[in-house]
Length: 185
Image (cartoon, rainbow, N blue to C red; front, side, top):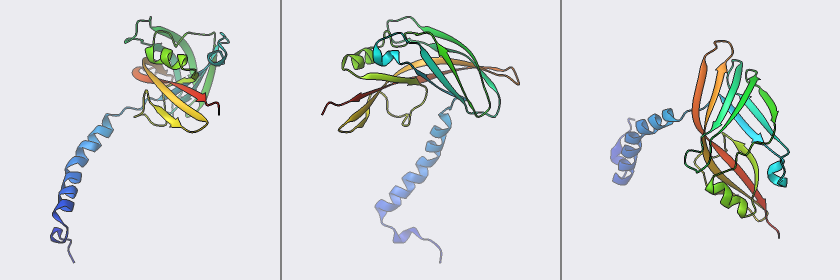
């Protein structure tokens, strides 16, 4: 028995038509979303204790080739602060992790969102180029009776080299400054 639209109400037919008409555009939009080959996160105990204890960088290589993370350049282009370039020179195994320790570097300077958030007694816990929900920026993404998470965003330029081919890649992307706070109940 062949399928016929005559048994489906007009609003439902119209909805099916709209979904079918929009599907190619949704597919095109999904193709525009780029994913970087390298995921990274900076951590510092100095952010929570107001010290200059240094920083740790943890990096994950999402490719099957060995990569070398050359640098991460915090552009600070919308703030009244100097850009911050971090020379990294860290080799990352295929589909693997690597980490590196640094002296303390001030990544939180000159960003209004970060300054405001710190003034409200939030604790910076990580700076990374990934999040569980990339559509959420500058919003509270978890709000329970005991724990809240907040994010601010900045642009960076990440540079790395494919060790096998010696091809160099520069990728401009966003990083999120992840904050958390515990409520006093």
